[in-house]
Image (cartoon, rainbow, N blue to C red; front, side, top):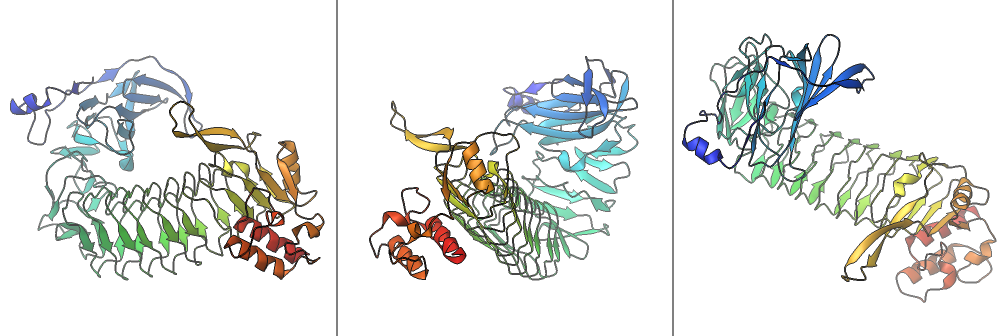
Length: 535
C-alpha cells in the first residue's frame, strides 16, 4: 500500500516513470482487513479504530472515516492509497492528511494521495504536503485534473497540491468557487492566470482576486517581489491570503480593507513589518502566526479583538503596544515569542487567557491593568516573569499561569477573596538558571517555588501560601514597617523616596524591599502604593 521513493527519485524522473505533473498513477485498493479495537471519538460516539501504517480508520456502523499521518523527510515521497472499504465498511470521510518530519520549521514527506470512489466527504482545510491527488473516475462527488482536486462538475476548486512545482496555474472557466484553504501552501506558484471565460475570478499582477477585485483571495506563495501594496479596491483579505509566502518583507494595507481573514499571513516567513489600518476592528485567529522575521507591528485605535494564536511564534518580535480599545486577547495570542519583552496591556482588558504569553522568555515584568478579572491556565507559563502584582479586580487566578517561569520571585494578590485555582492540586514549580558543574554552561532546572506570596491576613493568598509552605508577606500588618523615610507615617513622600532609590538618586534602604526579594523595583512600588491608598 505504501512505497517510499528516496534515493532513486532522480533516476525515476530521468527514466520517465513520472508524469508531467510529477508522479505516475497508483492502483486503487478495494478493501482492507485489519485488527480493530473499541474507541470513543472526539464527539463521544462509540466506534472501532484500526491502524494501517500511516492511515488510522474510525469505523462506525454505516461508514468509516480515515486520517492520514505521515512521518518522513521532505526528500522522500510517500504513496497513500485510501481503500474503498475497511473491515467491510465503506470509507466515506477523509478527516485530514498531515505530514511532518518532527520540525516546526521544515516540511515532511510529500504525499501522492489516491481517493476511492466511495469517498464523499473531505475536510478541506486539513490537507497538507500533498504532491498529487488522483480520484477514482467513478467517484460521484470529486474528480481530479492534473493532480488538483475539484468537485465532480469542476465548479469548485477544493485543493491545489502544496508540493505542485508549476510556476503558473490557470483557473478554469468552470470554477465558480474556491475553497478557503485551496492555495494555502502554494509555495512554488509565482503567478495565477484566470481563464478569460471565467465570470467569478480575476487576476492583477499575478494575484488572485474575485471578479470585482474587492477580495484578495491569494497572493502566490512563490512570487518573488519583496513589497506589495494592496489595491484600494480591496475590502477583504481572505483566509490564508498571504500564507506561506517566502519573499514579502512588507505589505501595505489601505483603509479600504475592513477584514483580514484567519491565517492570512501565516508562515509569511520573511515578513518584517505591517501596519494595520484604522478600518480593522479584529485580528483573526493565527493571522501572523509563524512570521519569524516580524519585528514592526502597528495596531490601530479601532482594534477591539486580537484572536487566538494571532502572533504565535513571532520569534523576533520584541515589543508591541496594544491600544486601549482592545477588549479581548485570545488564547496563545503571543505564545512562543521568546524576544517579546515590552507589552502594554489595554486598560479595558477583562481576561488574560490560556497561554496568552506562554514561553515569552524575555518578558520579565508586566503591568496588569485594574480592569482584568481573570487570569487563565498557563497564561505566563515558561515566561521570564520575575514578579507580578494582581490588582483587586482579579477575582480568579489559575496558579498554572506561573508554571515554570524562569527565575520567578514573588506574587502579590491584592484581592483578599481571589479564587486561586489549582486544578491538579500541584505545588507551583519554577525554573532556575544554574551553571553546569562539568561543562560550565548555564542550564535551567525545575524546582519548587521558593519566593514570596504577598496578600492580606486571612486572605486566600495567605491560605494558598500556608498550604504549600511558601513565605507569606502580609500587606495589612503595622504599616510603620513600610515607612520608608521613617517620619512615622506612610504617605506619598515614601513613594517619592522609593522612586529615587529605584533610579539611583538615593541609597536603597532595607524597608523599601517590601516583598523581600532582595531588591527594590516596580513590584515594591506598586505594593507600597496600594498600602498607602488603603491606610
